[in-house]
Image 1 (cartoon, rainbow, N blue to C red):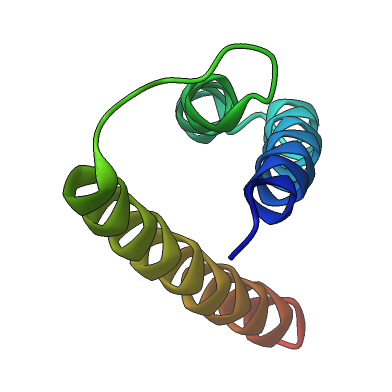
Image 2 (spheres, rainbow, N blue to C red):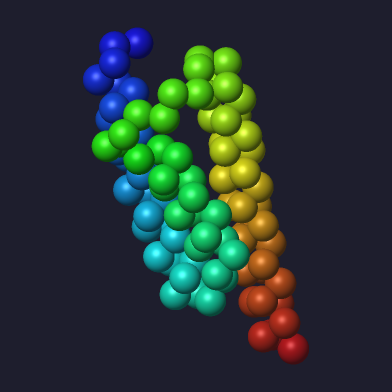
Length: 87
């Protein structure tokens, strides 16, 4: 892939993690906000963090698994909250 692709991915990741951090902070999920801020710093587009291709591949997979897990966790939490309000 061309280098410009990775720059765009880092920019989109950075903006996305900042938005997730803000949403977590407003929802009073401070620990998640801190994690998202850390990920935003890791993926920030201004200064390249040289971890090597292999380590970046591992980081990308771990972050992907983390994001997918948070989606399922948030959906389960919403379902439990909605069902408790019906009682």
